[in-house]
Amino acid sequence: MRDSSFSSPFGNRRDSLLAAPRPPLDSHSTPASEDMAMQRLCDVVREKRGVDLALYSDSYLKRRLVLQLKSKGCASLEEFAKLLSSDVQEIDLFLESLIVRVTEFFRSPATFEALEKRIFPALLARKRAEFSHVIRCWSAGCSSGEEPYSLGILIREALKKEKERFSALVFATDMDQKSLTMARRGVFERKRLMRVRQDWKDAYFEKEGEGYRVREEIRRIVIYRTHNLQDPPPFRNLDLILFRNVLIYLKPDLQRSLLITFLEILNPGGYLVLGRTEGGAGVVPPQYEVIEAAERIYRRPLSENEFRPLGSSFSKV
Image 1 (cartoon, rainbow, N blue to C red):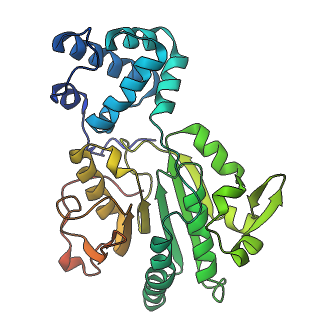
Image 2 (image 1 turned 90 degrees about the vertical axis):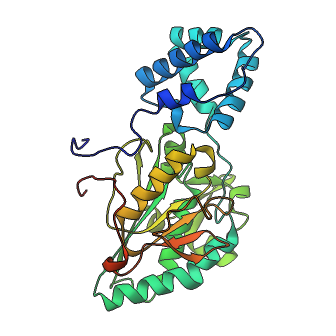
């Protein structure tokens, strides 16, 4: 249930989308008529599916719209908006076109190596010192599940000698139901496992048909749920957030809003991992500590005296 005390860092972004200068999508529209069509398109998608198109950067949204107009044979954005208004299945197909599913297990191996060899040892050492026994992670924008399952494998490996001492949860969210269905099923093509070490493949996967199924000991620590990034964060008190290869598709002001929110829901000393082409100076709020710049790994300061909340307010979950 949504908490009425939450003040969304996004607000209503449709107006900013409409106000942003952009060249016409087609040669049949005037700027005024295209703005009206864009407003209609935003209204229809939000009303029917609860998705705010202003979540996406203008350049990315325009590229997708140009492709959609061409594939649907629409001469103008107004015609495309009418198509979506008349057929909800077309809305689903359009939203499907906005989803990027380029993923695999242990994508960006250097990042996972940093997690395995440096981040998790430091995290576990702090947990022992604090007499804390729970590890909470969030894979935000998890797509079809390769990332959270990869994280689950790393955690299981890190806890091999301390299974009884620690419990771990990997929360995994996405707004796309099709991706979540694939993730929960836990069966993947062989090519998605190309970066999985053979000993880990033997330990954590079992052959199923032409693919591989993630074994139960990993699947039971990964919890999937639907979440729209425009909504209040579903978790708090997190030790690690993976938010990789999503930020680049978002507007700059939304990028900052999300990073502020993540900062506030991390535990002191909790880590944030972005994609290797994301983040950097001017994007990541200065309250984060840079832990590994090349791998875009950041940390909320350990000392509360070093941390100042940045304005998002929501009740604990």
